[in-house]
Every structure is written in C-alpha cells, then in structure tokens.
Image 1 (cartoon, rainbow, N blue to C red):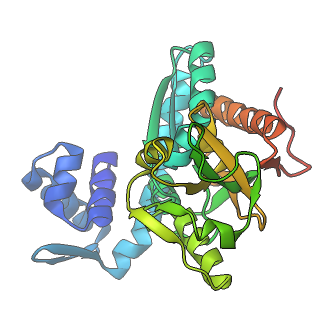
Image 2: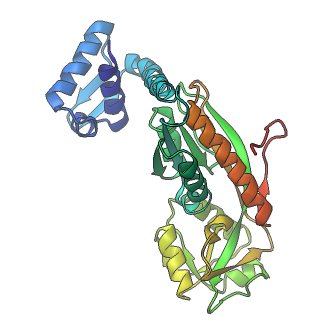
Image 3: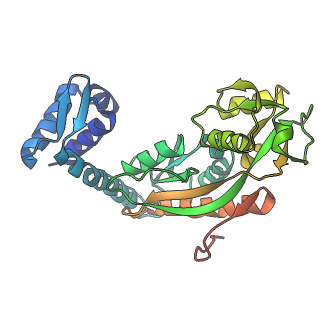
Length: 316
C-alpha cells in the first residue's frame, strides 16, 4: 500500500469516475486503474463496484475511505510542518470560505498574513459551506470559514468548529439613488414592496430570506434572480433594486448604503478544521489571525457581534 494508491482511491470515490479522477491527478487512466487493482489485491477486498459510467463503494471501500482521507490529511500536515521548522519563512495554508466572506474578512486577513509571512504559500478555495466541509474531509483544505448550521456529518470525519461572529443580514441600496432610507430600519412588509435582486437558490442566505417572507405571509417583488454576489452588488449600485446580504459585504463599497431589518435575520460565521489533524505552524498562525480579524470587524460594525467562547483567548 502506498500514498499514490490511497490518493487515487479517494479521488475515484469522490468523483465516481476513473476518467475524471485521472484528469484531476494528472495520471493516465490505465495507470490509475492498475493502482486501484493493486490496492485491492494487497488488501484482499474489492473496494469499488465498477459499472459503466459510474463507480460506487463496496462495504470494504466505505470502511477504507475515511481512513484513507485521514492518512492523506496527516501526510499533508507533516509536510507542512517540515517546511515550517525554520519558522514561518516557508509553509502552506489552504483556506476555504464562502464568496461573501472572501470579499471582506478573508481579504483583510490574507492581506495582513501575506505582508507578515510572504514566504508562505496561500491557497484560497471559494464555495458554499457544504462543499467546503467536503474539501476539509478529504484533506484538500486545512481550515475553512463556514456559515451553514445544518450541515450533514461526513462519515468517519469529526470537525471542530469555533464560532466567531453573529452577522446580521442587511438591506443594501445604492448610495447615489437609495430605494430605502440609508441607516433606517426596514420591516419585511416595506421590503416586499421594493424591487429586490435575489441571490441564486444555492446560497444558504437565500433560503433564510425566503423563509422569513413566507413566515410573514409576504412575497418579495423580485426584478432579477440568480446572479452571483458580486453581480448582485453591482446591480444594486446601479439602482436596479435592493438586496438582502450579509453586513460584511459592504466593506470597501462606498457606492452602497444599508438599512437594518426590524426583525433581524442573522447567520453564524465559524472557523472549522478536522479534529484529527494537528494544524501546522502556518495554519495555526492563520487561524489566530482570522480570529483576531473577526474581533476587529465586530468592534467596528454594529451589525456584527463576536460570539467567541469565553474559553477562547483572542490573539492580539
């Protein structure tokens, strides 16, 4: 058994397809097939059901998968630790975050970290909380900021979550031509009569907003639906409508103003990592910096509240 075999098995299990897995791993498909066959021979068990166009795990494969993911994650941590023995002159941090945090908290944290430790390789993955948790589980990420609270557990993987912030969803409007009074408090009835630009349904906060309207017996006046966050904000800046977004997306956007909702809608921002993988020096440093950055954001924005546990020592 070797790491290449385990890595190949994990990718085939993740993608359910030999061809796509070989493309991700940059190996020829016949070589990948031989690696998996050799691994099955060494373990004395069939790991994959091979059907045309789709691959699924056997019971033996389901047992092996979380262990293989854990081994690969530990190997990555060991390599990072070796790079960091000389200090933070070298190393790697693989951070994941939703798009709404990449343009605010994450942007500030990464900029500060890079200035202090320019020799550390930084990799940022942008995606929804569910996708980020899956990447943590298979060792593709070291840490991730997540916002969903109803995530399904990943078999064989335990995640640690550190709650950082409670963030209000606010109504954003164009500063030049506001459709709602900037700095005011708006109720859902008033909001339902204003042109609304809605996020794609894949966003967790879209579900939160829709549920609030349904609970109040109201329906929003949507003028556009489906764009990504950056596009939503640009349409709002041009006065096409308003949008309900997390408060932090207003960071460094002077063309936007905001109003708070009379019935606050909030989301929790947490920092997650695998409990069974010891973070390297660079990852631990980034973790501490993100915590400190979250505290600073909460201090300067009334729509944010720090919810760090009392036992958590906030880095200076």
